[in-house]
Every structure is written in C-alpha cells, then in structure tokens.
Picture 1 (cartoon, rainbow, N blue to C red):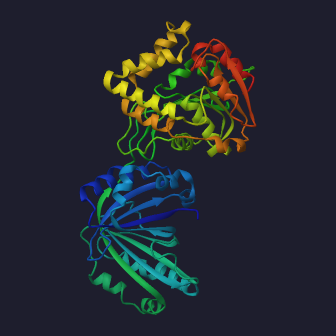
Picture 2 (cartoon, helix red, strand yellow):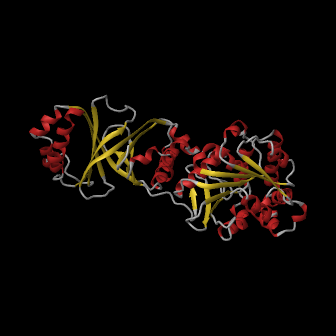
Picture 3 (cartoon, one colour):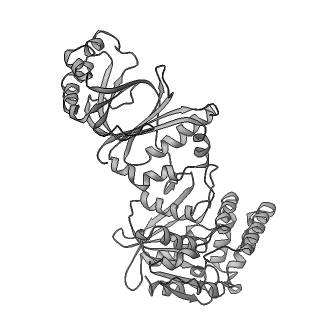
Length: 488
C-alpha cells in the first residue's frame, strides 16, 4: 500500500448518540488530529444528500498510503481519547475504506459543495475495458454537465465492513465533484448514462452503489502552542531542542512536578563544552500533566509516558537518539522506553528511580495529593523539595528554582501523574533489556542507592553521586557530568 490515495469513513449515529457531542468531537478533535499529519493533505465532512444511510461521511486525501500503516497514524486509533471512546461507543456503524488513486480529471481542488461517489465491482478480466470506457468516454461526457468540477477515480486497497471484493474482482470508486447547483439529471447527464459503450460495460459490472453527499465542514489542522506537540489524547508536551543539528541527540525527561529547566546546566554543558571533547544536541520536554491535563486525556501510566516520547520523536522526524536520560518518574520512563522501543535509542540513563511501585508509595502519593488540595501547591513544594535536596543545599539557587517549578505545576496533572507512580511494575521485563544503560543515584536519596543496585539489568552499570539527593544534576553537577562522560 503506497502512493497517493483516499480515505473514506461513513458513520451512522445510533439511538444513544448525542448529536452535539458527536459533532463537537468530530469537528474539533477527530478530523483536526488527522490534518496535523503531513501526509494527509485535506479532510472534509459530508452529510447525506440522498435518502440512504449512513448519514455522515468524512474523506481525506492522502499523499502516500504507506504512512497509514505506520505508528504515527495507527496510534490515532490505538490511543483514543476518553471522549472519543465514549462517543464512538454509541454509533450504529462505522465503515472505513482506503483507496489508491487511479486518475484525476479537472483542476478543482475542493472542497466540493456536492460530491457523488459511485462504487462498482468488476472482474479483473474486465478491468482494462472498464477503465478505458471511463477515461475515454464517460468522464468526458460527465465533464459537460453544468456545475461539474472534477472526477477522481480510485481502486480499493482496504475494505470496510463488507471487506475486500472476492478473489478475481476489483472495487472501483469514482468521486464526482459538483457545484451546489448543477445539471445532474439534465440532458448532459442522461446522455452520459445512455451510450452503447456504457451499456456494454455495465453488463459486466458485478455490483454498483451510488451515494450523494452535501459538504458540511472542512477540517483545519489542530492548533498547537509554539514549541509544543499535543498528543492524540490531548496532552501537551512542550519541548526545547538546542545544539548543533549534526550532533547526536540526547533526550532528557524530568521528574513529576518539574519542567525541563531542571536540565538547564546539563544541556548547556553538552551543547557547548561537551563530554570528552564531543558535543551533543539536546532535546528536553515537559512530561504530560506539568502545565495542563486535558479532560479527554487518558489515565497517565508509564506505557503512555513512553509512548509520548515516541510520538514526540516521530513528530520531530527523529528515528533514533543517542540516549534517553531521565530522573525519578523520568528515569522509569527512560527504562520503559528502552523496553518498548529498543530500536529508537542506543543507550539510556535512569536516575533516582525504582522499577516497581509499592503500597507504601501509593499511600504517600495519596497524602501528597490531599496536601496539595487542602493547602495548595506551595505547601506541597515546601515538603517535596526539602525531601529531594540534601540539607546543606536547602538554601541553594537550584533549590529555590525547583521549589518554584513545583509550586507552579498543575494540581490536576500532578494527581494524574501519581497514577503512573502508583501502578507500575517493570521487573519482569528487565532481564531482556539489552540496550546499554547507566543507573545513577544521589548517595543521599534514602533507600534508592541500595535498591537500584538490585535491578538485575544485565547491560547496565551503576554510579552513585556524592553530596546529592533525588536530583543529583542539581546538587552535584560536576559529579553528574563525570558519570555521563564515562558512559555516553
């Protein structure tokens, strides 16, 4: 499946479908998400203009059908938002078909006020004669109908509810675009329907279906804030890319309640002086939930966090990175990314994290959510950052910087993020991870130094950073960079 083509979806709402919710979802989420992809060039919704069902259709022009098999597209179905799941669960039917382009006649680029879709199944042995008639006679005659704008012809490559045609048959689709006022049914149209050549061809047509549609809406691409991508379920990933474009890329993933500025000093060092005489390009991003948590977003779990990074890399056209470096929740994300997408990274670094949640952790996170709700994020920041930093650094500039990050974090996003930290266990996957890894921990980070040495990951090494707690890059920058230098 490759080359230009056409994606057509027909929907029949059910008795329980809320019309307002259906149209709001389709017009502001479902269609615009697809238009954001570079290989989908146009998208339009149509309402039935005849007495047939389904009542609604959406059609998309695709520059290369090969992308429809790639995850950057298939994830739209695999990672549906909560709202999409709810609305689609009420449909009576949804019929999705994919066609490859055969020919186009007419310079019109759409959207057409009226669209007539004629589908015919023909035997492969008769296909050449069918195509010859359509190209040399039928389209020429249709183009003389007042209000005709364009005719495009396609062949089915992915069937819908009825599946692909039987072996030895081909389903051909012709889409005719017209002005709202047109000459369908008039003398020119009747002449096109009444020729000896057409009669001969139609004797061999196995089946025929004709639908007429009136244009309802043209989709625009979903808007995104500058230097951000919005995931398929509405989570915002704000990112920053810096350094020489020719350098290997290192991705940094922050902890819960913090943003990508915890890596400022590390990023500056890697992009300027570098490590062992080599500089790197740095990609940093805010994990979902730091600045906002969309109502339609799915529950935050570590598989979803790893998928977020995969999506960000795909949107930035990055096939593989030199390393993924994460701390705390970001450290678990880096390990899980190595588990789920081993072909997209050469190395990983996981700092100050564990590989499974515990009942005690679950209780602690619940208490912290209650504290934030009752006394505010400032109170949570005070308790949290004092726990993260060792006592000698409680008056440091990085302590104050981190406190402000936590105080400004989204309460709703924080609560969702704890859902990941309370519900994960990566232990069964660890023995099979063969991506080289480095485990880093601050020596003052409670029981983590002992726990991280027992992960049982065969391709990892372990480094302990003196004079540091939960965020060692902020308390002992030189020690942290030395650990990276020995690994990266």
